[in-house]
Length: 189
Image (cartoon, rainbow, N blue to C red; front, side):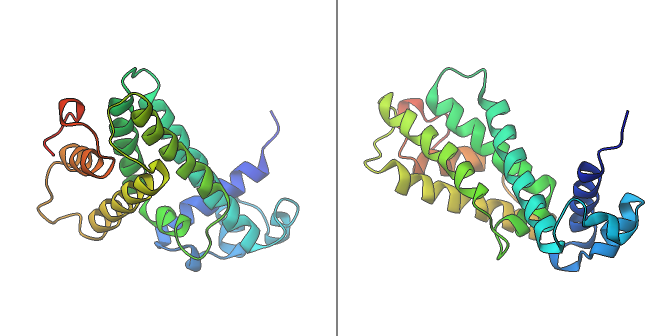
C-alpha cells in the first residue's frame, strides 16, 4: 500500500500543534522531520506552512462536526441531541486544546461556519419541536457556542481547578441559553 504523504504531513503538523502548544511554534522543517521526509517534500502537498496549518484547522472542524454527529446520531429528541452534541463539542475541544485555539484564532477558515451551522440546525430543531422558546435560533446558537468556547478555554487553561461536573455544566448552560422548556431540559435550569 502506498504511503499517503499528505495525510502523514497533516497528522505530523496536528501532533506538533498539540505538543508545542501553538500553531505559531510549528515549522515546515519540524513537520517534515516528524513525518520522516525532507522539507522540500512538503511542497508537493502544501504551498507553504500557512496552507498546511489551514488544513490542520479545517481537519479540526471536520473532526468536530463528526464528533457532534456521532454523539447525536441515535437520539430522537431534539433537546437531547442538542445537549449531547454540545457535550461532544466540549470534549473534542478539551482533547486537543492547542488545535482548538488555532481553530478559533487568527488562522480561522471558512470550515468553522459549517460547524456553527450544525449548532444552529440543532437549536432550530428544538424550536420546531416546541421544546425551545427561541425566537432567533442563530442568535441563541451564537450564545451557546460562546459559552461552550468559554467552557473549553477555561477548563483547558485550568484543568486542576474545582470545576463542576462537565456534563451537568454543559447541560445547564445549553438549557438556559437555547431557551429549552423546563419539562424537557434534562438539567436544572
